Image (cartoon, one colour):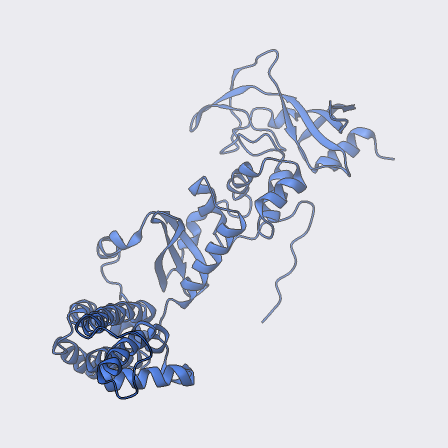
Length: 424
């Protein structure tokens, strides 16, 4: 039959630990606690918490006891109490000696930290805090501490990188961004950095990977075209609206219902309708033709008949979208050359600016078509990041959030063997 001390060790799921005593007590709220007094075994009493090296003692205070919270046993709160002292590590200096049951600097056991991290993958922070009886604001710190077990060497994420995707995504209002780097071959996050990468990606790529083939994601190219098209739409709407207002001022309407043969009233009505059609054409102009509804097709036909400049901008956008779908790089290069000439002679200021931008990135766009790459995976990753942020109701500590979005890390649950990978 196992002794009570052995039972406590099994309950704590620890090794290299000596259990000295145990006791039950109730706090002021009537919650029952199991307090286990323990110490590291003699061979691990002076281990460095960072490198695991056995080091000489720096001091041994007579009374310097600390309490660590463990996983609940049923409804009973489990705690470990032990003396702590400092050691002198040649590499890390004077630090508090490691204990086998907790991560460095933590007031909770390893199993507790790992369980909180696992729960945080699937539940909101408030639900995790309620389940584990902790403060919801500290959930992020448990995640950061727990990363060492499943991924002790984070630099290995960079091994064998061939195709990577780089993008930025917002994590808070007020233009707060993080830059995300994804391994296209494994669909995993390999690096996350605080800040908008658009300002320094080009400089870093040119410096550290001068021989790489850089691509521009088709999604972003179409996004540029949509921004130019919407600028034209707004400009044409303002012009149509001003025209309608001028007609209203030049031909004030008489009281009562206008006559059927009142040409002035018809002119005002037509001008207002034309302005309204342009204002409400956002979806008609933005959708691909095969997805248009009947009403959107009618609106697009009205624009084609009444506003040649706006319809020309729409055709430029569609032409660019179609050539980006090409798989023949030679044909795509010829089509892009034609598109650049068309945009530069379009007499539309927004598309003349887009022409300059596309011309600067022409080689990168052709690389994308030739290699058949896109940033759809990283866009999906950005959506997952936003879901994590929304589920957590935001992060106060940006590092905790960046630790959370490492999608290739599988957090182990305590006292469970990992399931075997299913073969393809």
